[in-house]
Length: 553
Image 1 (cartoon, rainbow, N blue to C red):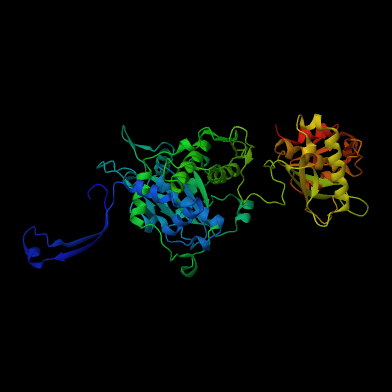
Image 2 (image 1 turned 90 degrees about the horizontal axis):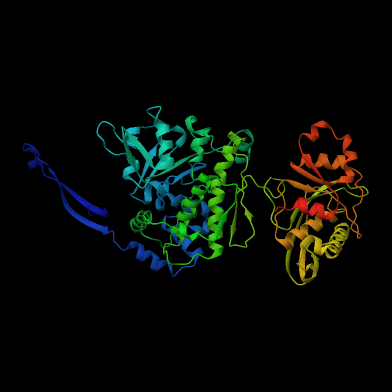
């Protein structure tokens, strides 16, 4: 009772006679009824119960346990709900969530667990948060599992050192009192309102702008945030739609499980299975590891329960996305230092490197700087007859069988001819392009996605060849790159009649690199200087050289 605490109904009594006595204490407890006692084996109980659920069922059960109905939430909103839980199970976890009003950002930290403390607006004193130097009394981060700042834009510290002490604590879990270093385990959560359109905010600034001015542009502060939760993906709560009437875990049992999970580590789930990409710094890796460990504790509370590759991939991708969102804001504040934000991971020793982007930055119709998955290529058709140059996205997949299948219905005749040329060049140059792999023993499926008015797909034989090779060898296509090139059956490259127009279109589509045959170089003498400064134009001498330059190592 004295160490773990419990929920109870208490009846207080007042005795007026005792109140008249000197030093009398008129209040006393008349009765006490425990609602549910905390038990020492709560983790064993929850681990045993988890075995009866699939991962998806358990995920929905957790969301119902905090009072929400998962069937009324889409996939993105369910991810937000799970990320909100991570600070409860992971020590010294720093999380930011910004989103519209009325989405329940502070609900979890105020209503569900007695181990969390909510600070609503106003000043936060160093003595209250960390330590009172006069008395030595420990602050909130020592007393609670989670300290949440509500309405973060209105929070300010009573001393100018407050933010610096907070930054030091967020980095190391320690703060100083004179010569003494005090260690605490409380997680910090900052939630705030974000009323503007996300895309508009990204055009005029960055997504951490609602933070107080001492924090919003401080990249060192931002670097200590382990996850940025996209609160704009969560709907405004309506009691009739979003509050559940299904069963879930009792809140005091759930909060007791969470506080005990903080003493465990689940990082071993990554060892030997997941390899993070080279773009992640030391702090990035630490942040991703903490998020992965927290999500694993929530979804797989039994350490002995195996985590399938499919679920592990979902967890790692969410952790990387949450951290990359922080990194992108740092990039907007200081581009020279945080240029490389291409987060990636590989599962298994022979897995394909997968790149993770944040949905608010990514568009299927935009040329972004992230590498494309194997088999996907951006291409510009030079046009034919009355059609103007146009941008296309070619997507190829490979499987058992033989031949090439076009998924578009109806099939554009010009694209069908480009595919025929690309396929024959793959068969003829197979040894040079794909090594020992036999392209004739695989079936390729191709789809052409038009991004402009022209939907014919004429003169994209070389991009088709690159897509076929990339899908077969499992190599990503370089990010921000557009390919240009019309092949013939003999393997030579047709002359491009309008190289300047193609370069101007590539700039309009925000590409960073344009890959063209070297024969087009002389035409580009007429390219305006302004265009040259906006795009990197690279040349290739033959199809094999184009494949080598278009695909990543």
